[in-house]
Length: 440
Image 1 (cartoon, one colour):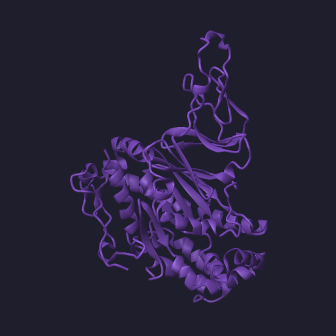
Image 2: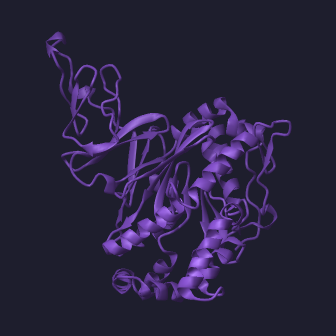
Image 3: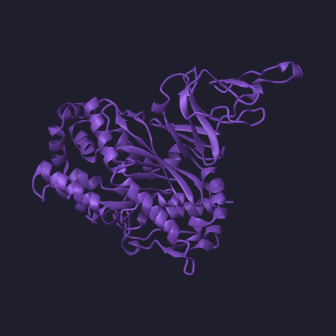
């Protein structure tokens, strides 16, 4: 551990520095349509975006439609078994070639003039093609692939910037944190096939962050309900289960906020959960099929690592900049629509190599807090809209992100660490925002 403060939020004289002074940012970065348009180009169209998961397209011909920033794409597994990201745009006059969210197709036929492509993107048919000259080249008019596609352990990333660096370099320290969710499965498999929870709020995409300061306030009633439930199940208000929210969200030294670099951030409760791994193992043994899960994890990873992974529970509570989060039982994707409009998609995660009963319990737990009628996600949406309304008061437009700046430190892995309620995560995201927005 090295006790030192991190770099400033913006480089002096950079484009972003006009909106940043010390650890304060101008509220215009959350409300300005012009700044939002710059974000689309400088961030979402310039770097890697999470697009889909391989488990969503397991078979030849399976596809899903997504966006990279503002650009529509089809993520498809061709008949040759290759996973591709194809621009969802006919090469003739530019219409969408796929208008449904998911399915299985051997071919995509444009609704406008009938140009037809196979599921590798090759142009295979043009109606009334006698109107084109003999040298008209079908081979060069297939669907345009995304300039860059790379996959990290099933997570498919794409970029429309051909000059972007490697995905592994982009992920940096975040890759090992993603492993914490993936390795919660004894087979190292995740399945994002249980449906999608979709929500939309009137506010900026940057509100969806890793914020460890708000839970005891915004989710106070939910935490009280969880505590009562834990007391009823495990006995005593001093039990590990009952005390977990208090310990993790009230500045325990074993629960921290972490800036991993590159805008990737984490509410890191891993040390806290590992410190109570015996409790988590005992709780798992009481579950239906829990003993079988422990045995499978031990066989896959060894007893020590298995016990740690079971305690962590597949929850890195990780934000991968700019649009991906891995939280509890789901993968979260942020879709920016406008400066004051954001969509959020939650994909519940099934673990490979465990029983249907255990996966169903995971799904019910996800619904309890993050579902449309859950106790947590609707709270966050409401707060984001109140944020939007409050930011219209611009007499003093500065937003403070300084909490914990005086006590953060650089860890041995190079990450910046503070208490879990500190705004280390907000500063980490803002630092990368500033860098990308100021790039030439």
